[in-house]
Every structure is written in structure tokens, then in C-alpha cells.
Length: 157
Image 1 (tube, rainbow, N blue to C red):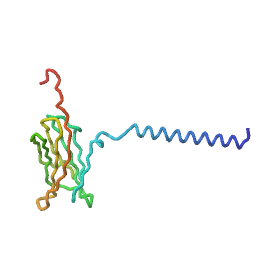
Image 2 (image 1 turned 45 degrees about the vertical axis):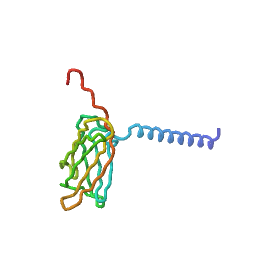
Image 3 (image 1 turned 90 degrees about the horizontal axis):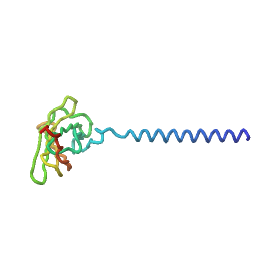
């Protein structure tokens, strides 16, 4: 075998090795996937604000408290909105309702509200917010599937 043929063989082996390494690296990266919190994140934009909403449980179960962590930024400047006011609310076709006023959290621009869906099924959820009493309320809405109530363990009722 000539030296030239041996050099080409080595080059092919290196190429195959590099491609295999890249394939394995990509497969490992894909298997890690997104974190659970990232999968639950919802993003909405209004005229003035950008909202990132992370429920404590998604999809929620009926008769269980679900805390919504809402990070609010100015849409143009991307600065967190501090000490605003708002609420999260929900209702279903049968007329059941739940709502909570926002509590400003320890993280800058973060607000918390808690909902408790009394029945399973499809719920309309909304959020309204304003920077202060001099600014208009802006709202976003989405539909939320609520799962059946969790069964309690026997003897723990």
C-alpha cells in the first residue's frame, strides 16, 4: 500500500471519528431536554408589558392550589416592573370562578397569585396588570385544561 493511500485512509478514519463524536454529542444534548420549569413557562405580550408566567403545576389538578409566578417587564426597555398592581382570575363554562390579587415577590419584577380550580375541565384564565393607578389595566387571557382532582391516600381524608 502506498503512503498516499495510507494518508487517505487515516483522513477518512479521522473524519468518521469526528462525525461519530458530533453525533453522540448531539444525541446527549438532546436527551437532556428542557427543564420542567421551562416547559411550563408561558410568554405573553401586551401593548406595554412582557409577561413570563410559570405555574407551580401544569396542567393543574382540580381542588389543588396552583401558584402562578409572573415576571413582568416593560415591553420596550425590558426593565422589570416594580410595585405594580394586578390580579389573576379564572372561570369555567358552568360559572365557577377563582381569583387572587398579585403579591409582589422578593425577586425584582416578580408577582405571585394563587388559583384553586374547583372542578376539572376547560377554564378561561386571565391576568390584568398596571404599573400604577395612573396607567390603564392591560390584560391577557388563555385557556387552561384542569385535570381531575387527585385521589387522597386511604385513611388520609
